[in-house]
Length: 195
Image (cartoon, rainbow, N blue to C red; front, side):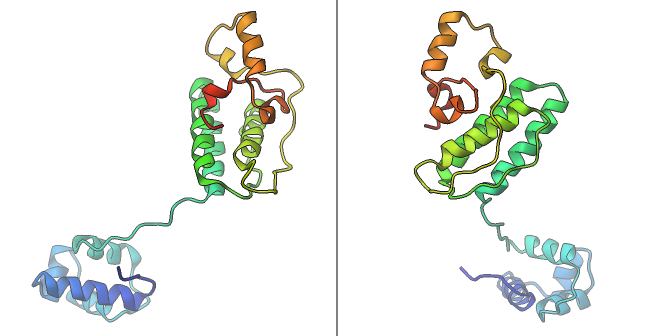
């Protein structure tokens, strides 16, 4: 696979695809609502070509390229933003699902470092992300995050969505991973599915 890393490489790829499809520059220009001059400049690798139009032409020829996979930090930062949005809409249950999904995904990425994301607007969810970051890094790096603050009162995230009897609370405390218990968060290991 050829790497497109410059205006010249993009221009060569577009020219090659156009010729392979038997199109003239004029036909390609007309099918994209552009001028033949634009196509000529694009194929020659002119660096000041309008990006949106260049992408439109590339797509019409089946030339696609993907963005790199998200980094662990990008996943954590997006989770914090999405959680904040759900919390502001009053949906704690979905915010918790977003947090758990992000932590599961982060665990598969085996990150070596994670920086503090922006606040979610909830001390509980900020602590949850901090504890989760420590859990997903544990064993893959000696660089444990130093951010995050222990909650002053115990939090059972499951109690936000259902009633928890005393026996269930005791079982939850017993089955909570240490990283979460250290933050005064109690959630059963099997509900995390990331350990």
